[in-house]
Each structure stands twice: as structure tokens, then as C-alpha cells.
Length: 560
Image (cartoon, rainbow, N blue to C red):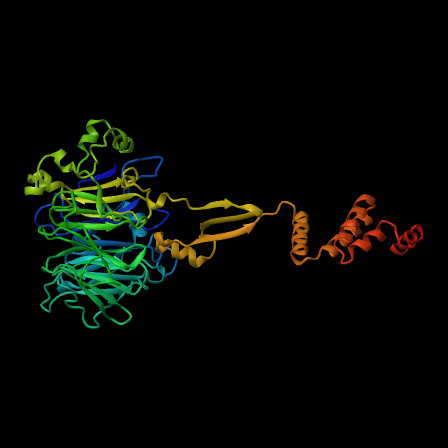
């Protein structure tokens, strides 16, 4: 396990950049006021370049910032607009912020970066700022607690939001400056996941990874609703928590559109549950209940790895952040909540991989030795005191572009980026991103079979790969390599004639060919072979040797 980099003094919610040209950029939406007094309710949207692949710097740097009049509850980033699909100049896509006052704000990250040097010296920007494309006011719906962009290329302009009062909205950003808002229930969108009193919070939203018009919403009463946006009505409901406990997160399987994972915030039953919608809506397919070294208090957040559907990361109120192997449904390792021990060994961000993987494997072990115990406190039985509570994480997210990288946010105002490239193999299998992208095998007869990515096949397949990393289409091709085409033709002719019994014709052709090139010996040899396969081969052989059977018979009679 590696602590790649860290951003200090930031209590924020995180969105990774989905733009291929900017894989190291993250957006931080402030969730608190920092060191500002009680009379400040504003926040800030910051864009950081983590410098992971940079050759000039290895520290995070602010590349864009804009002040906000409210704090962030949720944040998302989409590639929509980065390919000139809109009239707005948004080469870095769009960022959506769900604010705690019920406002949904659409930002232009490209404009934020370009005007960063001037905007840092001005007052808080208004809606006329080029950094803000549009604002949707929903002050009566409560804080925007969940937000998700559609991951499918054909529908990436759709934004789903859920509020603390149960309002779920689908916003179309085909025109980012003039968004259109609708509700899947067909009405005002009030209390979509609740019981009619407007108090049931929507805790998370997740678009299906295979079908673009299917979305799931989870609520604080333990119900998960699967929505069909074409019909504007629920497709089914999962009572994931029969006790009515709060569901903290929901995630679809990146490679299987009928599998969905739920996590429980209940301290009495802190479990992950995998549901197969084809088999049962009442009983999960698998669960982490009673799993050794799992969470012992409620799970706050979890995220499913888009590059390997057997990996999942979760963080809980027990001060644990666990990397799970979903093949065995057991934790692989625990991600430490502090890098103090690494610093004692003199390991910086650049050498952390070697230190953890080889010298300090006891820091990130199978969770039998909880990493939180290294820093004091016992979160399993009381939270571990103030220090452990401050280190507790509330958000985990995988990078959509950087394989094996994930971000964590903690209450001690730290945003950290970790690499699991070294420990992901502890499950006994290499991660799926280590599988060869192409291969070839040879067989007899010049047969060659090969497989590879379809990125260069058609634009449609290439676009599908971009939207679903795990569902990349592969092409298997079978070809024949011929070094001597003339020899191959002769062999095929020989095999065809022998298979059909055309021995006489074949020998006749060979005799003719030998005669044409003046090869008397071969001509006589193939002529003899032709006689051998004639029906009256004995008589024909005498003629071939220059004897007349009638003359031989006459001489024989005279001799007698």
C-alpha cells in the first residue's frame, strides 16, 4: 500500500477528472468553513493537479479556484462537452456541485483554470461569472446529498441529484447554460424515496453500468429503488435493510448490470450486501455479515473499482478503510489512516511503494492487525478517542483513469491518494488491469490465432470502451501465414486428387510437366506411376515397356 500524495487542511468532497488529458486532476468541494468564523457560510471549489505523473513536481498544486456562497454536499464531473458536443466552450467537461442550501451549480472547469489568477483577487463570483454556467435553485428540497452523472456516452449529459428531503431530479445539460429539470415520478419530485412526509433522505444515486436509462436511489429508511426513466416509474424495490436502517452507499457492478451492492450505516449490522436482481429482491446473493476482520461499526462510504470488478473499497465509523476481494467476500488489507510510521522510516511519497511493499508489510496487513491500532485507540469499542475520530474517513473514490489509485477524505481535513497496485495481488490473483491487452499463438499448417483490443476497429466500439473500462470489446482473429504460396498450391492439389482417387490424372499431369522441362527420368517415372493405377495395369505395363502382348503370345506358342 502506498500513500502517493496528500492535500492538507481540506475538508471536502472529491471528484476525479474523467478527462484523459488531465488524469491527475481532482476537484475539491469544501464541506466546511475551514478556519473562518461562525458567520461564514460560503465554500470553495478548488481544482488540484496531484502531479502523480509529472516530471517537474510531485506535490499537489492548486490550478483553479472559485468561491461559492454555499458549501458542498456532493460533487461530480462528466466528460460531456469535452468533444465540442455543445455550443459552450468546455474542453474539460462539466462539474456539478450539490450545495447544502439545495442549489445545484454547473461549473466550467476549463474557465476556472484559465481565470484562476484573476478570480483569487476578487470577491465571490456571481452567476454571471464564466466559471458558472447555470444554477438550479431548490431551496425547499434541503441539501443535495447525492449527485451522479450518467456514465454512458449517449447519455452523459444527464445529471441525477437527490436531496435530504427525498427529492430526486434528472437534469439534462444538453445546453449547460439552460438546463431542463424533470422528476422520475412525473411530478414535482418530492419524497421519491420516502413515505410521503418529505423527511426521507436520498443517500446515494447510481446509474446502471449497462443500461443508460436505469438508475438506482437509496434512502435513509433502508429502501433501494430501481428506476426506469423511460417509463418514469420504479422498476423494482429492494428492502435492503429490513430494520429501516440507513443505507450509506449503492454501487452497480461495473461489468454486470444486474448486480448492485449496498452498504449499511447501522452499527448493529455493518455489512455489504450484493444483490442479483434476476434471482431475488428479498435475499442478497452474498453478504459480509460475520466475515472475520470486517467492519464492526457502520459503513460510511464504499466504491466499486471500475477497472477490476473483484475489488471494492469501504470506510466505516470503526476507523477502518478496507480493500475487499469480492470473489471471496473477504478483506484483503486495511488502508492506514495516517502516514506517521512511513515518515519515521524516512519514506516520502515517491518511495512509499517500496517501503510498504517490502520493508513495512506490517503496516498494511490483512486486517487481523488493524492499522488503526498503530495510531492509538480501539475504534471497535469506543471510537478510539478524539484522535481516532478525527482520522475517520467519510469518503472513498477510485480514479476513473488511473488504475489502482483511490482517494480518501477524513475528518482531520486530509485528502489522500493511495495506490493499491502492490497489495491487490494478495488475494491470490493479479488485478484485471494486469491482464495482457493482446496475445498470439501459432499452430500447424501456418495457423495463427490472436486477440487484442478493438480500439482501432470502429469508433462505436472505441466509445463503448471509454464509457465502460471493464466491458472493453476484444477481437479474436484467425489467419494463415504462407511462406511459399506455390508449394501450398501444389500440396492442396495433391491432397485434393488423392482424396478423390484421381491418381491417373495426377500422374499424367506430372508426366506432362516433366516432359515439358525435358526431364526424361521424371517423365518415365510418372508414366510408370500412371500405368500402375490404370484398370488393365498388367497389359498397359507391357505396352509401356515396349512389348506387344499378341507378339509375346505368338512366340510362346511357337516355342511350345
